[in-house]
Image (cartoon, rainbow, N blue to C red; front, side):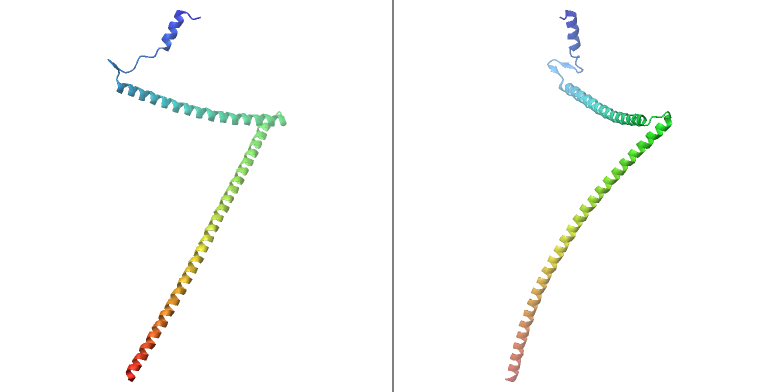
Length: 181
């Protein structure tokens, strides 16, 4: 059970701080209140940014700690597998192990990148083949259209020539008939 003194301390500690803006006869000055709220919001955003930055630093440190822990575990494992009194030999063995593991990782990464590049190249080649086939079909279609149009023009020209030849023959016949009369 709390005493009155404890309750008083509790009430004093939970009492809101006095306002930082002027009090009017009928309440608070709205400009001052909005200004104070904007300042509080800016402080909140700054605090959130600092918090996010701290979280990122903590995560980076945790990742680094995990890598160091894994390296230490590998070192202990290698030393346990190959106990020696020579600390330099153990350290060299560990370096060779780490270098071998890194080389394997680099090789796997290179192979994965080569596969991805080859797949990308094959997709590009297939796309270019499809474009070339489409261009070929379009070219053939246009040539066929041009050939049909040329045939129509030739037929029309032959008809026109035949009509002109017929008209010329008729005019010659009329002129020879008129000159002979």
